[in-house]
Amino acid sequence: MNVLVEAAVESLDDALAAVDGGADRLELCGKLTLGGITPERELVSAVLASVDVPVLVMIRPRGGSFVYAARELDRMRRDIEMAMSLGAAGVVLGVLDAAHRVDVEQTRMLAQLAGPEQVTFHRAIDRTPDPLATADALMELGVARVLTSGGAATAAEGADTLAALVAHVGERLVVVAGGGVRANTVREVVERSGVREVHARCEGSAARIAAIKDVLARM
Image (cartoon, rainbow, N blue to C red; front, side, top):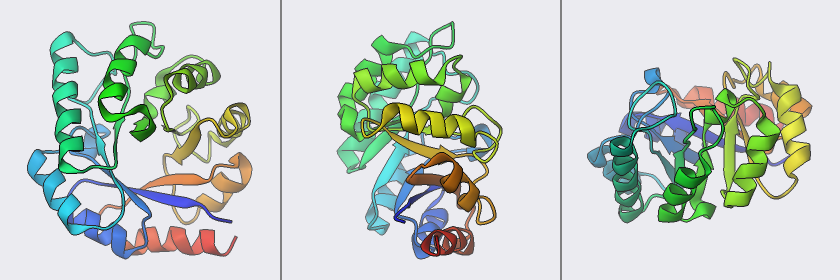
């Protein structure tokens, strides 16, 4: 079974550890304690110069809700242009409206700056009332991936919803399972949901990523 492991990192040391542990792709963020915000340009540049795996850059101006003011959307546009100009493989973003549905107009605008096929819609989906309807909107927008815990605190707890999403989208959208993914949970998450990509915090530990990779290699 071939399951891709994406590691969430927030520093150059994190990124190097994740790659050393076997991560297939990185999600580069600032302030993961806030759920991840846009990292500084200098960090993006340093990581891209130091690793040989694809790097996706988080585009999020602040923690908290995913409903953004016009000035925040302007900053997100500039941050996407920055990330792509430096050579990022893509970006990770999510915009909701006041009813906690996908803000289709703003998400389309942002996705087009990077190229929708380079975009992951992040766990803002877990704030929406209907994940299957959200997935339909994302497929219409043509984004590549959606990162989700299935609306639960962890991907293991949300595995049934993840399975429903995987069945619903087929090959049209990649479902990435994230939220508490560790070596002791990854088998359950993958077997119950059918996802073929998982997302895990690195926290400077190559061993953490390597342990997840080892479990997957033995499945």
